[in-house]
Length: 60
Image (cartoon, rainbow, N blue to C red; front, side, top):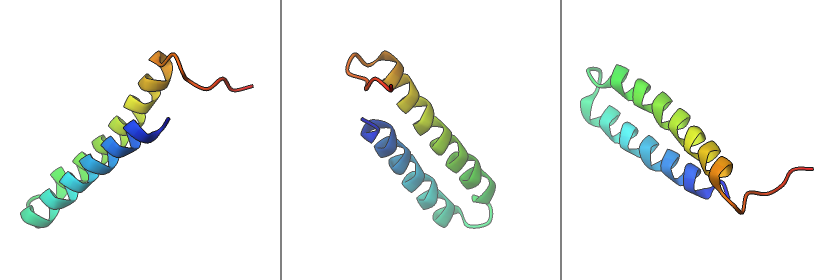
Protein backbone atom coordinates (compact mmCIF):
# COMPACT_ATOMS: atom_id res chain seq x y z
CA UNK A 1 0.00 0.00 0.00
CA UNK A 2 2.91 2.36 -0.71
CA UNK A 3 1.14 3.69 -3.79
CA UNK A 4 -0.47 6.86 -2.27
CA UNK A 5 2.80 8.15 -0.84
CA UNK A 6 4.82 7.20 -3.91
CA UNK A 7 2.35 8.83 -6.30
CA UNK A 8 2.41 12.02 -4.24
CA UNK A 9 6.21 11.97 -4.18
CA UNK A 10 6.37 11.51 -7.96
CA UNK A 11 3.84 14.31 -8.54
CA UNK A 12 5.69 16.75 -6.27
CA UNK A 13 9.00 15.75 -7.85
CA UNK A 14 7.62 16.43 -11.33
CA UNK A 15 6.39 19.86 -10.21
CA UNK A 16 9.80 20.68 -8.74
CA UNK A 17 11.55 19.56 -11.95
CA UNK A 18 9.24 21.75 -14.06
CA UNK A 19 9.93 24.69 -11.74
CA UNK A 20 13.68 23.99 -11.99
CA UNK A 21 13.60 23.92 -15.81
CA UNK A 22 11.46 27.05 -16.00
CA UNK A 23 13.44 29.01 -13.42
CA UNK A 24 16.90 27.99 -14.62
CA UNK A 25 19.75 29.02 -12.33
CA UNK A 26 17.52 31.29 -10.23
CA UNK A 27 15.19 28.37 -9.53
CA UNK A 28 17.98 25.93 -8.72
CA UNK A 29 17.99 26.28 -4.93
CA UNK A 30 14.17 26.26 -4.59
CA UNK A 31 14.15 23.28 -6.97
CA UNK A 32 16.57 21.33 -4.79
CA UNK A 33 14.69 22.27 -1.62
CA UNK A 34 11.36 21.26 -3.13
CA UNK A 35 12.88 17.95 -4.25
CA UNK A 36 14.04 17.22 -0.71
CA UNK A 37 10.66 18.25 0.71
CA UNK A 38 8.82 16.20 -1.91
CA UNK A 39 10.77 13.04 -1.14
CA UNK A 40 10.58 13.57 2.63
CA UNK A 41 6.89 14.48 2.46
CA UNK A 42 6.08 11.41 0.41
CA UNK A 43 7.80 9.12 2.88
CA UNK A 44 6.20 10.90 5.84
CA UNK A 45 2.70 10.63 4.37
CA UNK A 46 3.30 6.97 3.52
CA UNK A 47 4.40 6.34 7.11
CA UNK A 48 1.32 8.14 8.45
CA UNK A 49 -0.87 6.13 6.08
CA UNK A 50 0.61 2.89 7.43
CA UNK A 51 0.27 4.09 11.01
CA UNK A 52 -3.41 5.02 10.71
CA UNK A 53 -4.52 2.38 8.22
CA UNK A 54 -6.66 -0.46 9.51
CA UNK A 55 -5.44 -2.67 6.66
CA UNK A 56 -1.72 -2.14 7.26
CA UNK A 57 0.19 -5.40 6.79
CA UNK A 58 1.44 -7.08 9.94
CA UNK A 59 5.18 -7.66 9.86
CA UNK A 60 6.18 -10.84 11.65
